[in-house]
Length: 423
Image 1 (tube, rainbow, N blue to C red):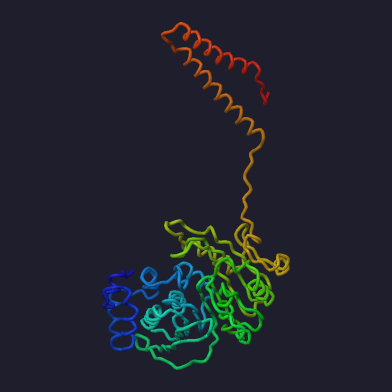
Image 2: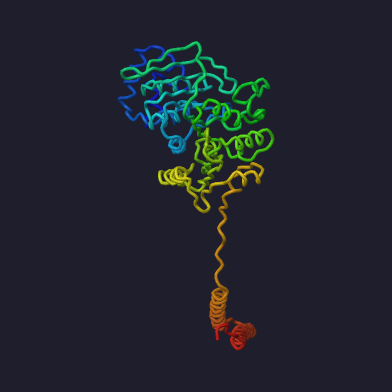
């Protein structure tokens, strides 16, 4: 993996905060752009992972202001393999393109669409797509208001993509959507949005304090008739009430939710918040929802937890086969969800409680007798030790002797009155 120093040297900057502006300048020239790509490929040839993940995460991301928290590779892999291959993919809140690169690794020849708000992320996103010779569209702006500052069109070349700036582009429908939006981001829900297709069917908007469902519905609206979406969100979307509860109920009644996969906490870089992958599909064949509680599927590697390949394979095998495993996964019928007031909190449906083992009473009593005998032996040993003690005073010697006799007599009295439970 390229170091911060190597990346800064390739970009010709001394400080990382200059990198975005310098990179955007280079991308504007085909010759400079291609020369930079060639220099990068001398140091790094693996195109199937995001070289900038750690660099951007540590040097450029804005967790507090924009809720940026880039997706760990293992979470990206689960989401992408759930979606499988498609001819077109959309990544809303694409960041520098980590999720899109994972989709590219699964099928390099599909059309890729990305939307990203951050000015600082856009140059890295364009770089990541063009160096991989990807065909696609990048919209730079606000995915929720649908107002975009710029639109970039990438076309395949002999080795690298060309980059062209467009004035506008028609809305598109895609077969798959992969998304990790900022969690519980504040937004401005304007009532006029209810006239738009993405919200019209639901008749209500996500609250201004939490845009989670606004992102979800924006994505859902851009799926083809048989499209599928994997969106990573905090657990709160499963049970919060108010307008979110109304939207969730409608999603369930319209049969859009296919699966809910609970992930471990502490797998992200900047937050310990445990997350879920919601899998939504248009034209589902049945109304069941598959719940998977993978919250314990990780290896602890401080300061974070890591979902290993064996955990990923277990989750995907269960998802792909709609398999039920006690205390791990369960197919839930619509009627049961309705009885729970459309609350999708995973513990309501998957009971992780393991009853504590209680040994037979006879075994407990045997252990108590054995313990009692050990205590008595120690008491006699202590009495003998006391009997060997001496002092310079006859009176104190007598007191020590009497105490030793007391201890021995106490043990003798106890043995005389002993009752066996097993005679």
